[in-house]
Image (cartoon, rainbow, N blue to C red):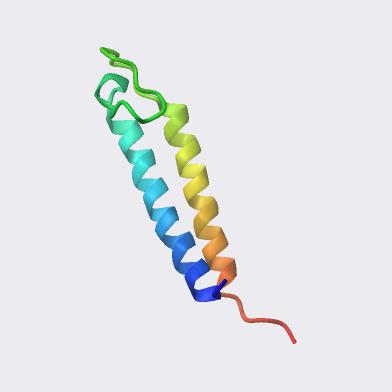
Length: 74
């Protein structure tokens, strides 16, 4: 697989997961789309742990992309 494609893919996924984390923290469980994990009809509970997990995965994707930009040792 092309190294540049891996770096860009990691960066895009990182942004997506960080945005998803913010969405989990700002939206009550009853207002989430039904296909998302944590949806519960009529609930006003905010899923902090879902958001935290999404943030951690997003940061891991950023780290993957960062290490992908390193120069190759000779």
